[in-house]
Length: 343
Ligand SMILES: NC(=O)c1ccc[n+]([C@@H]2O[C@H](COP(=O)([O-])OP(=O)(O)OC[C@H]3O[C@@H](n4cnc5c(N)ncnc54)[C@H](OP(=O)(O)O)[C@@H]3O)[C@@H](O)[C@H]2O)c1
Image 1 (cartoon, rainbow, N blue to C red):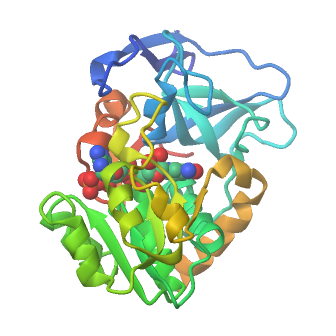
Image 2: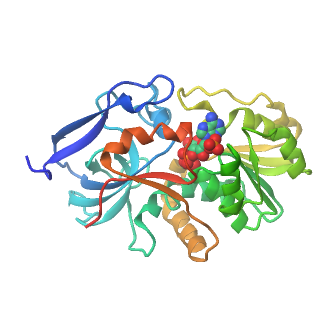
Image 3: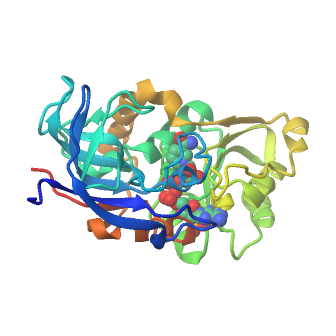
């Protein structure tokens, strides 16, 4: 077989118990798949890393079907169409959407998220998986529509050096929020939040008292909280929300996502006594508005009102070893793996 006929893949070898490990995956080679009606064959160029990949590895799978043993690991990705049985996509098109850890994937446009045809643009291709991908879009719709941040707001963001959190803070600043505070682990990340990401202040949840720092930085309470972590951090924030404040549940990183059953907050009655609004966000509900969100984000970027941080590795062989770092400590920004070049 020529290299064009061989498909390289990383398969799920064993269901992880606790933290996911590189050895939960095994390398494999198979012939290229054959296309059916509506299918598009895509050569993969970038894989994006998302905490939700850990949820898909549970028996339950959460909001998507679980990845079965022997199946390629699912990922959000960017690729280039090499063969098409779908009139909407032509050979050479660059696309973004659900893919898997394979050199070639069959992609379809009728999944829970569209296979987006990427516009010709002057910005880097990888941005379509970071600031214009799930992280940026969840941050954008979360801040502008769910939290409806205004210049009156004191905003707090957890996992603030993460792909989503860093952009959520940046978008809140771009909307003119009065004060934007990020929460992260360690002094180095906290410095990055203020000096690079442009937040007004940072709280180091590993070395400082979250409650004391919230009192100090937000004497009138927090009016909008963008929660990426849940757990003790959410509990501390519930105690420190301003009356009628808004809380957005975007993720629950502190759970490690090893199970779909996640402990809710202990300070639950604060929702009642402070008349808080708690809402979730899930991008599947914005399926038909992703282009719109990406266009708004592209404007903020073009105007220099939003920064982008990417953490790009290279090489198909690295796919499994990067996944655990999402939970065990990674550099600020979106974690990406480059596996090919467009032609
Ligand atoms: N609802 C949606 O549609 C949607 C879309 C995109 C993302 N999300 C969610 O948003 C959250 C953040 O995703 P992301 O892609 O921005 O993350 P990311 O870039 O992978 O970064 C993950 C962040 O989580 C923090 N973290 C890791 N373990 C933690 C723990 N035990 N407690 C507290 N923080 C921890 C890390 O920061 P520290 O080192 O500072 O702890 C890290 O910055 C995830 O929960 C993800 O599922 C939801």
